[in-house]
Amino acid sequence: MTPSSTAVAHPNIALIKYWGKRDDRLILPATSSLSLTLDVHPTTTTVALAEADSASLDGAPMTGDALERVVRFLDLVRELAGSEARASVVSTNAGPTAAGLASSASGFAALAAAAAHAYGLDLDERALSRLARRGSGSASRSIYPGFAQWHAGSDDESSFAEPVEAPGIDAAMVVAVVDGGPKHVSSRAAMRETVRTSPFFAAWIDSSAVDLADLRAALAAGDLPAVGDVAERNAMRMHATMLGAEPPVRYLSPASVAVLDRVRQLRAEGVGAWATMDAGPNVKVLTDRADAERVRAAVAELGVTSSLLVAGSGPGVAVREGAVA
Ligand code: 2P0
Image 1 (spheres, rainbow, N blue to C red):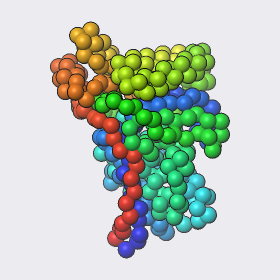
Image 2 (cartoon, helix red, strand yellow):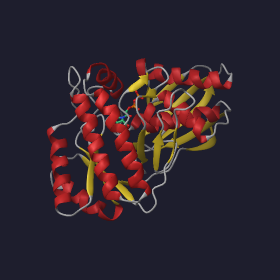
Image 3 (tube, rainbow, N blue to C red):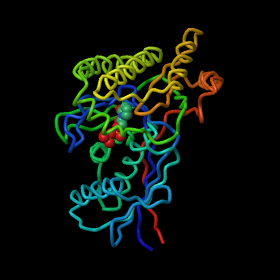
């Protein structure tokens, strides 16, 4: 029996988006971002020290670039731990992978926590957030439950996430999957091309700072309608910025637009519902938990979704020790 460390982490959906890096190697973002960790689609990852590095995802061995990314991440952990030991990584995603549903956030948050534990590192949450960031930027936020802000920072030390209080807000996200397949362009590549070629990128950075300040004020005030308005406008501005790239990066599909229209109509009917979208055609609808079932039913009626579920605020990353045969 080999000692092993298992961690469970949940995806997060940004209300203020991370789109663009200032440093590709250290994964330092151009702007700060703020998200809600969900209680669905966890990733469970087990790390055990082994003769050689290996990784599997959902039962299939990882190869090529995906494996390389895991090994590079283990190298970082080994550097921190002063260890040369190799490791086996076994990971399962309860949700779809690379479909714009934050699988890399839950994936690298779980890997960071499990690997840190397996290599005997005693990291506090801030250090764990910084480590997860090196795997995938958005993973820095999945260390925490509920709302979390990733501070852009100015260097490796100052770029980490921390929890944000939102008294009186009982938010839900209706996750409307219109296409569960892998995205056509990875968010990493799309982000890089947006930074490099979109003439709107400078405006994105400026407006993102205003959106973040407005969102923080709305969360502190427990004002869900204000939170929703800011989140929807920030998501649309992120997509506008990438549509300005050369060639354009377009994740919106006709089905996405149908859901966006229905959300706007719900508001006209007096239901608090606000849309956000990530690097894929799927739409997440922010609403009060009390309205979530009504929102879900309204989106279902469109007949454009392959899955539709209601998520609530989820937990931070958790580690458990064990043994693998
Ligand atoms: C976000 N996304 O804030 C934004 C909004 C997608 C759209 O973070 O290159 O997988 O690994 O740091 O974290 C997706 O980007 O990118 C993402 P890397 P990541 O949630």
